[in-house]
Structure formats: structure tokens, C-alpha cells
Length: 228
Image 1 (cartoon, rainbow, N blue to C red):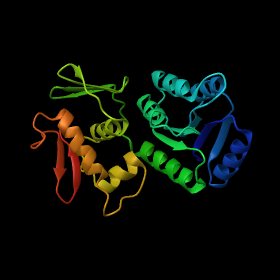
Image 2: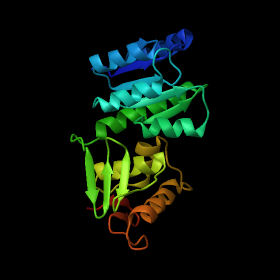
Image 3: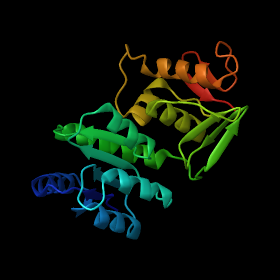
Image 4: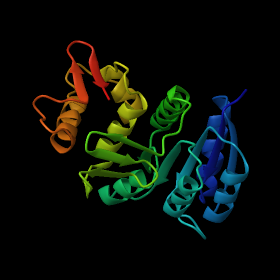
């Protein structure tokens, strides 16, 4: 069966261009031109991916994404926007978006992001966690909130996504390449230390003794594992 994509975008020319290209790539595409109708469609039908513009008539992309997550819709969301402010990206990711692409973008990059999100969605465990606790840390996935000893812990959007991914795949040994592909959405290079740096930050914030982590483990030559 063809994978289904809902595109919520108010630029007619872009809708036509993207729809033609995505259908030529084998996707089944529906489109809506405002936030209200886009939300109604996303709640009424089942999709494999939702492409959501931020600046929409009637209801913003942020509001649509937030409402979808509050309604229990876990379909991957790719935010599209002409904005290029870091705060907008952080807000989008914190309210439940899975990735963010700024206009104008290259078509090949868009297709790569879509493929990565669809691959991640298929690879996710079937269970849907509402919350998870390890040691003194509690993660509330509905609120995208992390508490340690009852106090809020400030995580960047990417740190939160990495932690969430590790918890969802707890007990598994996960390579750096897999994390870069599934969490960051791009291929690894020999010089890439992005994962190592983010893991170090998570340990500083969540482990009792970051030098000797109990939960966020490194397996030399193999990758990482969340052990709980």
C-alpha cells in the first residue's frame, strides 16, 4: 500500500509542486490550505506523515500540532516554514513536531527528511508510553517534561528527542549512525561527535554520577544503550 501524506500548506504553487513530486515518488497525497481544515482531516483520517506549515490561515501550524498530540495522534509531523528563528524550531519540537525544514528548501533534502521520518515511525515500538521513570528522573511524554527529584530539568529539543528515543529502545544497543539517522535525520561521518556531545549533556543533567553513568551507557565500539 502507498504511504499517505497530508500536506497542510496555503501556498497553491508549492502545494502543486510538492504534490506532483511526492506522487511521482509513490506517495498518496492529500492537501488542505488552512489550519482548521487540516486539523479536521488529520483527526478524521489515518496518515503516515503530516507536512505542516507554521503560518496558516485560521489556525497556526503550532496550534494544529499541539492539538494533534493532545488528541493522541502520534503521526510524524514535519514542520515547514519561511521563518528561520531558532526559537520557532524549539517551540515546534517541544510541542511534538518530529522535524523542521525552513523554506526555501531543496527537494532532495525534503525527500530525505520524509524518508527518515517514515523509517523512524516504522521502527518505533508498538507500545505508547505516557510516562517513564528511572531513578530520581521522571519523563512525562504527554507534556514533554522531565523532572529530577521533583524539579524540572531544562533539556534542549534535541536532548529531549534523544532521551525519548533511548527510552523507547531501552535495553537495545544503538549505534551512533542509527541515532544520527533516526534522531537527527542525517547520515554519519567519521568526524561527527554530535551524539557523543548530547549524551554527555544528558548525563550531566540526569545521572547521579555523570562520570560513572548508571542508565545512559556507552558500549565501546558499538554505540549506546539505555539500561533501566
